[in-house]
Amino acid sequence: MPQQIVIKTAALPVPATATLVLYAAEAEAPQGASGQLWGATELDWAKASTAGSFKGKQGQVLDIVAPKGIEAQRLLVLGSGKPAEDGATPSATQWADRGGSLVGKLLGLRVTEAAVVLDGPEATPQNVAELAAGMMLRHYKFDKYKTRKKDAETPESETLTVTLLVADPAAADAAIADRRAVAEGTLLARELVNEPANVLGTEEFAVRASELAGLGVEIEVLDEPAMAELGMGALLAVSKGSVRPPRMVIMQWKGGAAEDATLAFIGKGVVFDTGGISIKPAASMEDMKGDMAGAAAVTGLMHALAARKAKVNAIGVIGLVENMPDGNATRPGDIVTAMSGTTIEVINTDAEGRLVLADALWYTQQRFKPKFMIDLATLTGAVLVALGQDHAGLFSNDNELAAKLAAAGTASGEKVWRLPLGPAYDKMIESRFADIKNTGGRHAGSITAAQFLKRFVNDVPWAHLDIAGAGMGTNANEINVSWAPGFGVALLDRLVRDNYEAR
Image 1 (cartoon, one colour):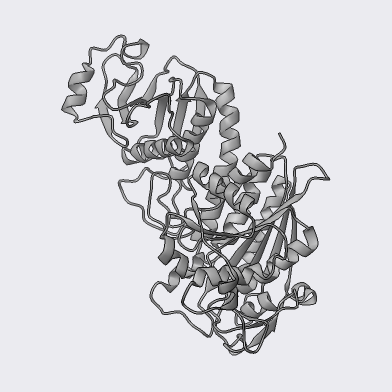
Image 2 (tube, rainbow, N blue to C red; image 1 turned 180 degrees about the vertical axis):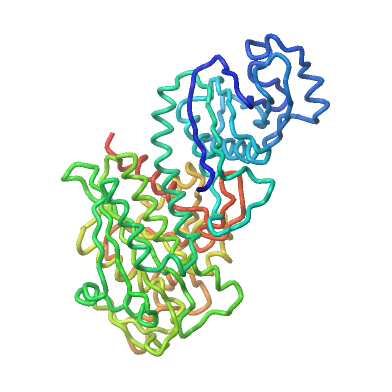
């Protein structure tokens, strides 16, 4: 069983503990250095910090073993960066980073029990909850298939227990429970993306999504005959070369009033993408197990909303397929008919995600009449070229929705950058033989992919998030050392709670 992290809260004074953690800003002594925490100690803080070259910078740590006068085996003083100026306080993402950095230090030192003093005015219940979320997110690692562990790692059989010492434990517990739901949704998305494709196929993914029924989410799974009956020729064209059957999972959370509009989130779920007949180069093809990161994010979001009992009506729709080359696979030049009746010339079978989303978007708007639709997809390599991995590409037909998403991205740390749509790009996907073609060529590849999707939303407010860069293979940071970051869950939860949730 993997090592667990247990986060508790308690009130001051400091209990006897294996490890005591304090924070110190640049050029400042740590919390309590002149008060009750250090009352009996003879430790000279100025001398200790100078000897340890500790300046209080973000990420620095001063490790003092057997500190005199404190009932702890060791004292860790962590740098919290420059003191706030003009009344400014650290952002939520900075508090999460602080929690992630803390867990990184504890794991590196093989600590299994710690108490953290959070008694300053900035340690509000919400900020403490962000710190706890950062701890949970940083603690996650995907090593279930490793039969050998590094000796330096904390033994699997031990649990890391961290007690947060705060002014109001009850208020902190409530805030942590709410934030934990979102962190768990992010971890679910990470787990799904990290799983190898031989373990997580279309049917297995549908089973994992169906487990949300335990949280009160209503689940419906459409199989291949049901989708064929609905006329989903675009989605089904992608799955023709695979022995794995396609699935569409509909997840409904009804936390709002019956008359409240439904918010719709749609995810691309290509569990593995070879490119089909237009096969990809072998180099890095193994990363295409993550081509379902959009569907993973939607599933994680539905977990978050249900786990925190969000007062909103929301649906998640994920199209699950595998794109493989086979004698039965769709060929370049084939023409397929989407559920909308639109005919599509398949120029490149590696531009398959937009075919999946075309039917999923049309189905969602026709059946549920949502207030808006937001789709997430690892859709184009072009967005990685344009934005790297720090931002997801944002496309929208609605300025208000786009602005709300941008604000939610800044607040959550899952940032987006809006790119254009327009008639000139739409013209690039016109086909000689059908209504449209599934790729407009190399130039403006992310934009023409979004233009393709726009054909299937009509007048519904809609946003498309291209997460090919942000959704997998990202660089490690303070709150994630996993290949899959779980991008999109925190972003969309923040969008919902800030703009659409009943108070």
